[in-house]
Structure formats: C-alpha cells, structure tokens
Length: 223
Image (cartoon, rainbow, N blue to C red; front, side):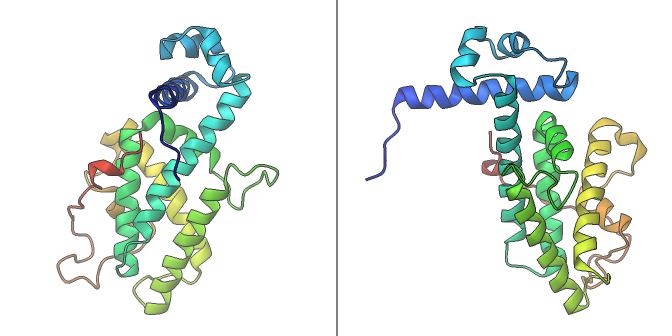
C-alpha cells in the first residue's frame, strides 16, 4: 500500500524546495563561496537554524541543489526526446523544451550549465551527473537515427550530440541575458542553423525560414 503523505510531509517538502530555490538564486548571482547560510536563510524567509534541520551544512545543500536541478532538467528534456517523431522533429522538441525550462528557471539554468559542462562525467565518485549522461546518450541515439536516415547531415552522432548540447546551452543564455545580440528566433532554429542542420525535408520549413515552435505544456514545469 502506497504511503499517503501528511500535511507535515507536504510542508517539509515545500520548505525544502523554498530553501533550494533561494540557494539557487544566490549561488547563481553571488557565487557559492560568497553566499553564507545566513543569507540563504534570509532569502528563504527562515531562521538559519531551520536550514540546519534540513541540511547539515552548505556543502550538503549545494550537492542536493545540483542533483535536484540536473535530475529535473534532464527528465523534462529526455521526455521531449522520447516523443515518437522523426529525428529532426525530436531535436526540435528537445530544444523547445530546453528553452522553456531555462527561461522559467534561470537561476537553476546557470547551475545546470556549470555542472554539466563535461561529458563523460569527470567525477565518477558521485552520481550527480548520471541523469545527464543518460540524456546525452538519448540525444546521441536520436542523432544516429537521423544520420542513418539521411535527414541529419553529420558524420558522427557522438560529436553532434555534444555540439548540440554545448551550442544550445550557450545560445539560451545569450537569449536570456543579451537578446539583442541574436536574431529573434526560437532556440531550435538558432541551434540547428549554427551547427549546419536544416529542415529541408519539411516542405513548409525551407532552409533559413523562421518557424513558430509551441512551448511545452504548463504542467511540464517542475517547480
């Protein structure tokens, strides 16, 4: 029989999320070393002692924030890649989902990019990046199918997956911080044009055309 959460459980989960969100904002803007626990407590509107009931120290809080952020971001993007569709359409949906998540969760987006800059993971002693490795493997598989089908023009699916991830991470941050530096377009269009891909196989989407991509449903937001 499944455990039924109590009001106390729900309140604890909400308070934990509020602390993590406050920490994400401060770490993204001030940096980890410049953010004391008392500042996180003030931002979350808790007494500093309350934080230590949830996390033994700032390092433990940081590790949970990283894991929670990567798992949530990767779950949403992996779901986008799992939609039954041709490979380029899957990439389109993946990039549209990333744009939506990053724009709604900018503080956590900074953490996601910082912590997933390398693949394979460089800290095998930790499990923090396992979900990102799995996401990248799924992205590589989509690229491989597109290359095999002749609809994605590249010689190596592994390097293409890395390029898509790195390029889209960089572009989405520019779109958020200095949008005037880029043409008005979707992340999907900007990324795929930047890496030399096109939608030529779709008659309504000739190379260089601007397309309107629907954002994920509101229930895709994870906090």
